[in-house]
Each structure stands twice: as structure tokens, then as C-alpha cells.
Length: 93
Image 1 (cartoon, rainbow, N blue to C red):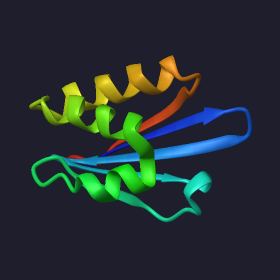
Image 2: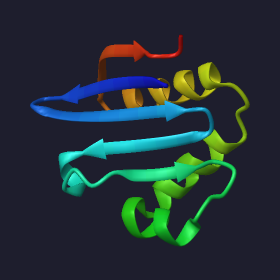
Image 3: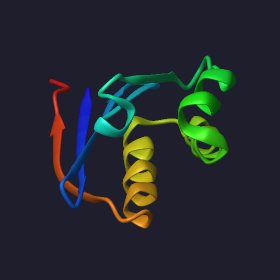
Image 4: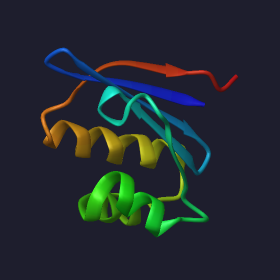
């Protein structure tokens, strides 16, 4: 599992990537995780929790194959929105 920690001001967002399952956790959603299986995308849940832009983001990521491609795309997308990556943990041993 790869964990990415982003910050913007005092806000912190964590992204967990475990194969093709992505979990987003941040205070803006009440620290209730948004769990997305890229092989079984639940469009209704994603649109309710993340909006149409979130759905577009998930569709783009679902096309990627490896964990590292997913990590790089998430980093690029978050940084374009003003989030700064301040830590990465790779628990895959």
C-alpha cells in the first residue's frame, strides 16, 4: 500500500493506494473515507461525494495500469489544485 499525504494551508488530505483500490480521507468529508475500486466504479456514490469533477478524475485514473502510474497521476492532479505533497509512505515489502 502506498500512502500520500497532501496539505494546503492547514488542511490535510490522505490518499491510500492499494492495487486498484483508492481511499481518500480528509476533514472536508468528515474523515469518512471515500473508497473507490477502479475495477468496480460506483458512479452514483462518486458523484454524490465528489461531484462531476471527481467522476472525471476517477475515470482518468481507471485507465492507468500500475500503482506508480496512479500515484503520479494523483500527485499531478492534486498539485494542479494547490495541494502540496509532503510525505509518501510505501508499505509494500
